[in-house]
Length: 370
Image 1 (tube, rainbow, N blue to C red):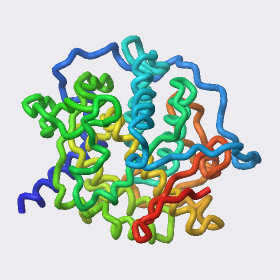
Image 2 (image 1 turned 45 degrees about the vertical axis):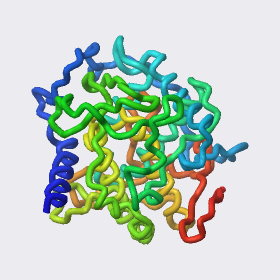
Image 3 (image 1 turned 60 degrees about the vertical axis):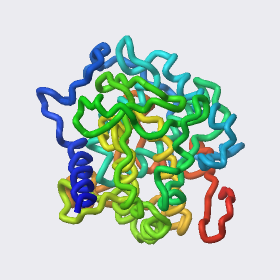
Image 4 (image 1 turned 135 degrees about the horizontal axis):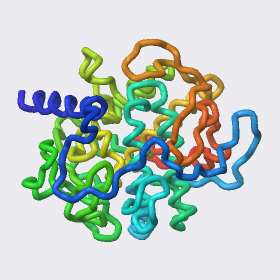
């Protein structure tokens, strides 16, 4: 009974990420650290990058494919290189926010301010697909990272979530473990400060100043992310059914309690990850969404002729209209030029020149799909 109550509490918090902010105080969870300079207003004059992705009508081939690998297959040096590039973004000034913010915060800002339009609807897949491409691009071009963004294949750890190798206290190659010091809890969601690994006492600046928090919850329900659960996701026959099965249903709008593998991962990590307004501050966010993007790729590969441009469902979160269009625009708030959905769907064509390392659990074999 206690576990059920915890699940309901977590899902309620996840729903609040979308709708729990008032107009008078859009970020009500006060923090103990002082605020940085105010975020930009709607007339922000940040220069939009000029290079846009090629349109669907443009032809192009990738000269080399970047390999995105599962976290546990990386050497300690490779993990450290990725972490170093993430930390590099904190040494560079923001291109979207005011003085006192970092380049790292630009990605958190865009994901935070997009949260009400790109979750629980048709845009979830293509938005996060392009968002991960932009993250990888900036790490490589601005911080000299040579690899692809690693992903976390969470189904391999469904039997023992807290013991996953994704959680390491190594100060150079570890992403940190569970939170500690639970007396620091200004948001009243039970998070503790991450005090080990390369991101120990990691400072968050947007939307408020705080320290990175986690609180591992409910390992007994981690079966939501096991091999059988992911097979269910991959068995869906339409785009919107696949996305709903992967992301989960909006708990504030659905009578069915189904957080989906993606939603459950956010909940299980606890702390900042369940709150969409804060989630991209946790470096684990990008490993989680690397796997979300991989699952999307896997679904398309099952029937590429029909699924490469498959797109349907509700354009606006909260409605039931099947009004999504390939010409819907994805707004990246000057992090990069806006793109149409159809222009994000050229897999393994510029600018999406990457391939994923796949693990097939029933053969215990790693291989690359090109």
